[in-house]
Length: 320
Image (cartoon, rainbow, N blue to C red; front, side):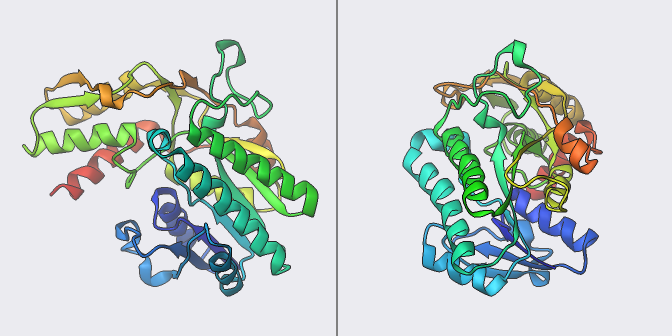
């Protein structure tokens, strides 16, 4: 078995590589990197995977990648994944996310190979969801509320189109929010954890800066998410279909903050930062993963309280 992970140096990509190395040791792992890639996420496994420099926006580069890796499975996780950045640079988000995936599909076609392909779509595609539509099923209308979400809708439907038009074995996973160690500090829960760790160590004043605390999100541990990605390509999911991957439980961001503060034990002032507020925000994302569970048997196994503790401990170690 040969597996290619685009974005292996990122948050989910590094955890997926670790999962495969532990649970599927007969698999040869290839991963993409850029000259400016930050390597700390894979520092413990770098010698166990084969890294290939590739710009996914360049078709020639992608063809060389696919030709060298000859993958049986492709996990396409590389993306511009931070929603606020998509407001500041919408063209980059659309180009990176949609064109990058298009090049993978075209390279697979040009080389006449037939791998299973998982594309990491997003719950952000659902966008404006009404209370009467909760929990969100795959049949819910897509009403994206950010350029990032629009780029993910493009990836999602491109996957469907290439499956229908060319018979490609594409599985569209719509992952809801996921957290865990190594989560980037621009993402809400990890940002709270990093601020608290810095306060614990006396590296910043006891003030937590926050954005919108009223949003509700469905959080799953990243280690459960990447296990789902692997199962998505085991042959039990229908090519071309979309599958929600989520916990089925939503948390108010305010409650997540309070849990982390309680875990830390420090006394802090919570202060709203206007720079952290978005032009439009999705009020609630609560998913229904029953379709994926029926196909694969997957269900999350790691309590969110452990996820938060592991994330806080990660930042404590990083800030030493």
